[in-house]
Amino acid sequence: MEATQEKSLQHAAEIIEIAPAAVTPFADLDDEVKLAITCAGEKKAFNISAIDLREVASFTEFFIIASGSNMRQVQAISDEITEKLKEQLNSRVVRVEGYSAGEWVLLDYGDFIVHIFEQKAREFYDLERLWRDAKKVEIPKEI
Image (cartoon, rainbow, N blue to C red; front, side, top):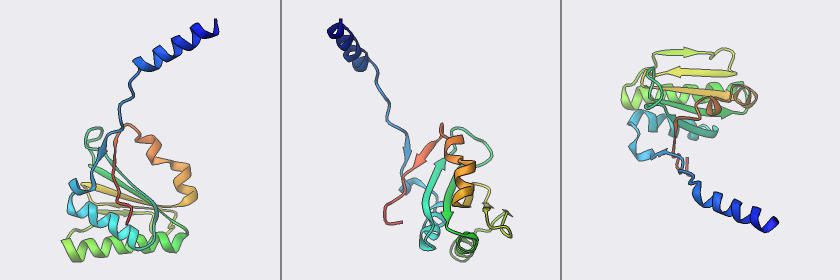
């Protein structure tokens, strides 16, 4: 009986093919998105991720999600992204939310949205889980 069940399980495992997760290469991103991710890394943001929403949402193309260890670091990451995008690419933020509280800062650039969280808020809202159907963006290890 056990041998029959084992063969059935092996056969079922052969039939099921798991498709690899779709990933958007970093090189394919717009310059603004690349720079925002790089700036977050330069200000020591951790757990930086990006989600390609182009196939699942119409309100924006990408989410960039990063964490800071405290309110001041969250604000510093936000400041760095805002200043560098303005200076280097003449790209201005359309809307900023949550800056004064510093728990979750949202920078809306239209084509992409940057979310900078304190760790507890990021775990609570878990945007990666909410948008799990979207492609992930490959983030280089040096960032």
